[in-house]
Length: 136
Image (tube, rainbow, N blue to C red; front, side, top):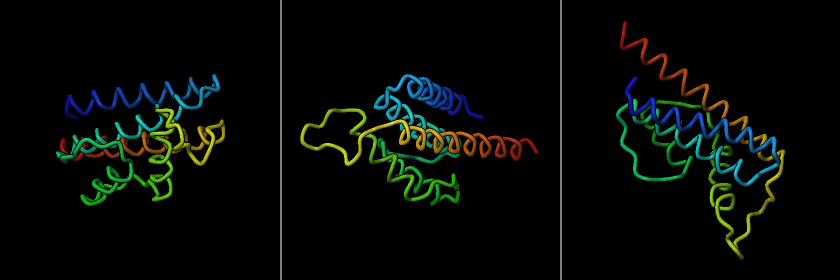
């Protein structure tokens, strides 16, 4: 595994662990921020490990599509990608009149945290399998 990939995975894992702590404290907006950032970093780590170029984006849908174009499948559904893209800005900034269609709550955060856990496991499994294939 590349050193740069390891760095991205470390940051992604820290975001995911932070999200779990924030959820336990009922801090829903920062929980969602960290979940989104975690998934974004896991996907970018996988892209870096596979020598894929990506532009600066926070769109989970876009990153997932780029991976799928190279036949790398994380298992994120279109609905999950849209949900994660939907929570990004409203959880990060008070947008005034552009309020989200939902209020962050425990259930939403818990759902997103489960998605992030799945992404973490899948990315780690793919990178591990690729490392084994390179050695063999």
